[in-house]
Image (tube, rainbow, N blue to C red; front, side, top):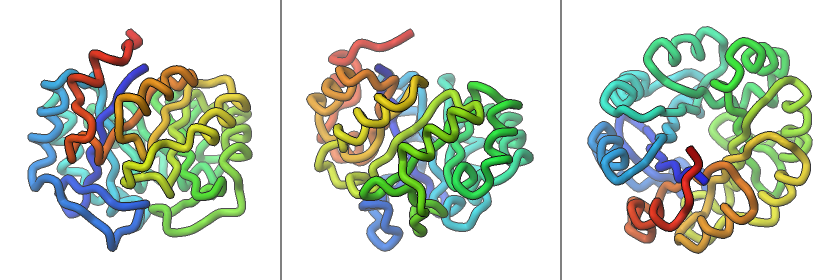
Length: 240
């Protein structure tokens, strides 16, 4: 299983939100590029970047920081937040981004999501961000009428090859992942799933690995020290 450090960008800074609440922000660094280099030096094989401003506004807002991070590290980066067009995906790929994450688009514009999956293949990840089982969109500020499982099954039918499942109520809380929801999603689709939200210990990572997820995104826990990234990397068998 791959352990993927998260770098959430807001106003050019590296921050973490509590349950996706923009009013409950903790700034962990004014220099996200240095944070990216740190996680790479501690053994990360991939980075997860989220443009929080972009997610809420519907367009990339931290493109400069994303570009600098992509060029500053030698490992792949995946980016989500405000990606609502094929042109934006192309722009990110040109900057060296390895994967683009589509969340709101998957719910609101299935045709665009399908075209993106067909055109970019493995470079597209569908973000399934759920609160109490229901998918939330637009920076998690709006709840849709679609369940996480419904969205995932629909997207597989349109060509999706990978998902990130985030339990919003657990995100940034250090209270543990929603193992039940992750297991349910794994039972319904046959493509790789990356889990996020609530991870605060190596035990959590071990349990996710046992469930069969491809990767786990760790945010607040590695910034607070609840999880030592180097120790976690040694404890969890890495896929090539």
